[in-house]
Structure formats: C-alpha cells, structure tokens
Image (cartoon, rainbow, N blue to C red):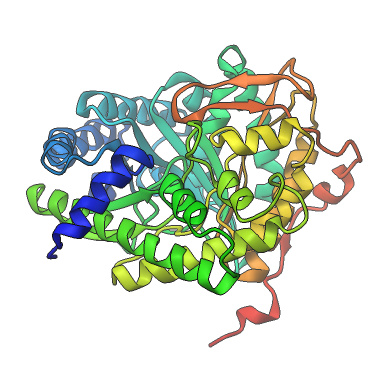
Length: 453
C-alpha cells in the first residue's frame, strides 16, 4: 500500500486534532486442538497455545505505534468459543478455564480476551450449558475475560429458552459484581447473527471457519467524521454522504496498513478491518455529536434514525472502497456509557430505551452499555433481549444487548466504570410484565425470508 505525502499529512492531523486511533488490534487464535477431557490438561494447553500465538502481540503493536505515530488503544485476543473447546470436561471445570484465559491475558499484556462464549441459537449442548451456568462466577472472578452468547440467527430463529436463561444469568452477574458497578455485565453480550471475526469486545470470538491464527483490526474515527461534517456547513445530504465516504476511506486505509504490518511481523494472516465507529467518553469523540452536527438538536430527537442511517451507510461505502477485507460488525456503535453525547441525551430525557431499540434497525448492537434499575425483573431483561433478537433475525443483521441491572441503583443515578467503558446513567425501563411471554419457551421460528436456498 503506497501513501502520498498529502495522505500522511492528513493522517497526522486526524491523530493530533481529531481523536483518530486504532481502537484494537485483535489476534484470533484457534483452540480446537487443545480439547481434552481432563480440566488441568485443557487449561495448560489453552495457556500455552495463547502464549505461543500472542506472546509478542503487545510489543509488536507498540513498535508499530511508534513507527507510524498512530495510537493503538487496545491489544486483544479472541479464541474459539470455549463451550466447544471445553465440551468434554466436567461442568465445574469451566471456572478453571476462565482463570486460565485470564492468566494468559495478563501474562501476554493484552487488555481483554474474548471467547468465553457459546452458540445456542438452535439448542444447548453439554458444553453450552456448562459455560452459561459458569458465566456469573467466571466474570466476577476474572478481570480480562469477556463473554458472549449467540441466541438467534436469521436462519435458525430465536432460542427463547436461552433468552429466558440469559435474563437470569445477567441478573446474577450484576449481583456478584455489584461492588464494582456490576461491571461483570459490561463484559457479557448476547447476540443475534454474531460474526466470527469481530475484533471488538465483549463480543469477540474466533469462529470455527477462521484460520489457525489471524489479525483483525478495529478502527475508530468519530472525531474525524465529526470534524468533516462540521466543515461541510449546510451541504445537502448527498454531498454530506460523499464527505463521510471519503473520510471513512482514509480511516480504513490506515487500519489496513496497521493490520498488515502486525500480521507480517507476527507471521500470521491478516483478516479484516472492522469499520465500526466506536466512540469514547472523550468530548468530541462521539457518535451522538456527529448526528447533532447534521442538524439534530439532541440525539434522540426526530430525525436521529435517518441521520444514523446515512452515517452508517456512508461509512460502509467508503470503507468498502478502501479495502477488500472489511468484516466484523462494521457499523456505528451507540454504547450509552461510552459516548459523552449519548450520556447527555439520556440525562436530558431525549434518549430512551425505546429510541435505542429503533436505532438498532440502522446500526450495530443497539442496546449497548445501558444501565437499568437493579430491581428490574429478569423476565423484563429477557423480553428486551427478545425484541433485539427479533430485529436482527428479520433484518438479517447483527444485533446485540449489553445491559447492566445495577443493584441498589434507580433511574437518574450514575454508575462509573472508568476507562473506555465510561459511566452510565441509569435509564428507565418499562415496568409492565412480560413474564408470561418469556415462560412460553421453545423456538421462535425463522422468518420466511430465511428460505433463500
């Protein structure tokens, strides 16, 4: 990849003035050959395989960061879903596996490790059941382990037994980590149509269709896009889309450069660039601010969904022109706690859970890093998850929920997480009862649109 002097100058400007960074370089590692019926042997193999693959990830990223002058905020690892790898061990062994993952993450120096995961969109195996039951204690007892559960796909429908179970698991995780603002729930996400190459946490895992090892990159540039939109003045929407596309092109080119350098030095394959615009709590690095710069008084006002749709589409078009290796989620993230503009909108009453659900139709994830009162019933959480799964299933897109019912907190309180996770205002959630709906269980069938063969 060749870069002109003008491109280099523009990149320096974006880094220094517009919050541009590489949000994550994530190494995916297959653990399928670690499978063992002996828990101790499995944990040893997992630790050794991760250290052999990712032991140099952090120093390599640090060297690239210095050479290019581009910040790489996080270095992460994603592994094969542990429910598959650990299917042969006793149920009580999953806690030991979580600790082995945490130790490998700490010793390799990465920020997080993802893949304490299960894929249950059409039912449970023994390994799935063991992992899901272990989630609350595993997330409470580790610092760097992230978990995900895929509950639905457009082809299979929605596993409502799993949806009901995850409402209870999320509540228990919140209780066990209540002293830290229920941060365990910030490391747990449930999906519809989970991608196998997502570099972002908490949902990253190394899919079974992936190679032995791979480097995936997550770029982030809300501040750069905000600056470009601000400079556009009163341009019409067609012109605005072109401006955002050109900006996304530049961001993606930089992300692929970093990914290819890392993969070459780590002697592994380059996988994908994830185009997702991921905000941070820093002022000026906000998705909400971009939408407001388009002319919305405050994020959540009428017009927000249309503005977000334009943003998401233009970013994807620009990124697809810049690289043939786009993947992961590649959509705008709207995590409430991680976006200063979203926090302000919630506190002003402009943004509600219902509006977040509507925004899910045109962006990634949807109900993300949302804190709700601690007395919210698990059935209500499950029903909210079911709604998000339905949006993803019917629209053939990835949707997800990362919700935090914080014990002892009520609407209007603020929960502090720190770092990129920011702080979450506790949002109002419907007090209407959905328990009878959730108790039905079974499988919501896939829509007729799934019959595409």
